[in-house]
Image 1: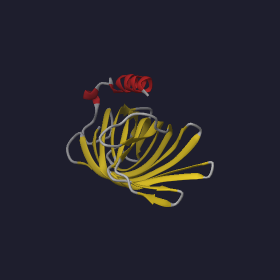
Image 2: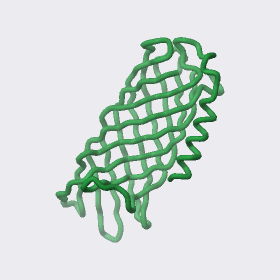
Image 3: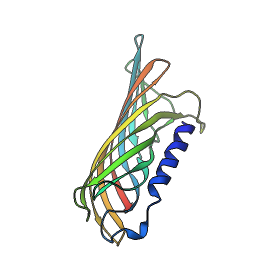
Image 4: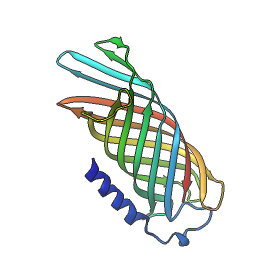
Length: 200
């Protein structure tokens, strides 16, 4: 994932090197930066050779997206990081609940598009796609083999300007991960409701 992160970072840097001074106050145009944080839920399951395992629980979703307005008014494109934390998930093996202490993280490096129906703010639609994974942490340690693969997401939200360049709002989003490891697929869904703080 390191090579992908470098590529994504360079692409975002190129997108963001626009003349920020040309952005109109109270409009979604020019340089774009969005922070997300809220509450959510996730569920991940896998089945192989008669062996089934699943994980689920509440999450603390977060995201950092960087980009710029492009092509048409109200449309921003760029790249960023999705980072959802499940601090105390539950686990089941073959339908039996397993008692264990661990954390899981849904992580993704994504490209995104965020379209405001009106550049002055209000309703906006967001989509993202990239490479992600389901990272497990036990006893404070992370690493090792974890399922990775395609990460997709859709969101719809509403925001309003609280200053010339900053807007605040709320958004519902749904992430889907088609992850796998060793030929075993982990189908993962993660709905969330997040607050958004956007500089644009």
